[in-house]
Image (cartoon, rainbow, N blue to C red; front, top):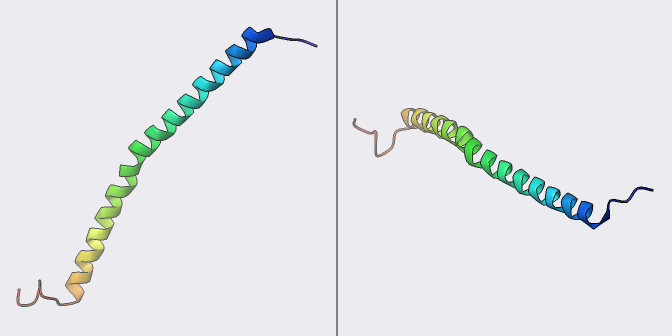
Length: 65
């Protein structure tokens, strides 16, 4: 049976802490940079849908224009 002693345990603990910090950091960056890639085109689709909807139904803004 192979033992690594307390130094190996500390080393593995530090490595795991670094790994989970990096994993959290990458997930935060993905959320920060990928969210606008979905939100901005969604607003374009919503604007186009609202323009089409206002063209079909008269309301106070486009009556008499």
